[in-house]
Length: 342
Image (cartoon, rainbow, N blue to C red; front, side, top):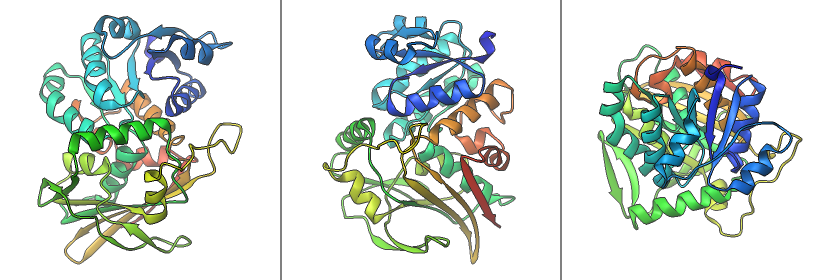
């Protein structure tokens, strides 16, 4: 197998990283297992013959060695506030594409702010938030926009049957809360606001059979970074079903448990993306199972498109800007089913 099908996975032994490694193998790629814990890497690689490379975000030389001879890198190692910039720098030095599965809003914003110019000048491809949060919502909103060049608002509502957070999710959340203090973030009027009031609660009319559900409004996720990065929409809001919001913030909620041989949990999801222009509304709906597991086909499909030249731009770009959104969503079947109401 040539180097063109070899992808470094930084944080390969994490919960999401393991799904990414399995998906790479399924699709004929050769993952290189990277991370700072040698024991965990060797345990993951046992019996596979896969290459193991110990590296840490605070050691640039180790990252250079980890990426040597690979065609791209997928960063699955949180907290991304600590890993994103060093791994992007290593990817730029190696002149290979970089993708990550970060759902940390501040890390996503930093990627666009700190690397857009350099990556564009270098002709490099950097795709942040290529995951369930960030990538999927961005693809859905882009597909819903269709031939519109602008919209008044975008709304992405999540109905999760439950949300059992991984250790990585809890750590990333703690890092984000520390960075923003007692504030929450909202994107309105084409700019970011830091708010100290409680987010609103309301009913969201999810498509049947889910139906109307109570949600936490302005439950800001990575989509609120990715969507306005390339779509002319001044107000972008994300919503989370109230039960799932309580799950993820409760210290007593257990980690996700495997419900099948692939390791997926039994969690199901529905994502309802609505764009509005005046009195006209367009909608894209996605359904599937396990928000962590489904990140793997998302980021690996993106990798495949990058390495085969099916991209629309260079530099730092979200999923909807980098790829044909509708074609990408269709390629995700059977992992995700999508309905468009234009």
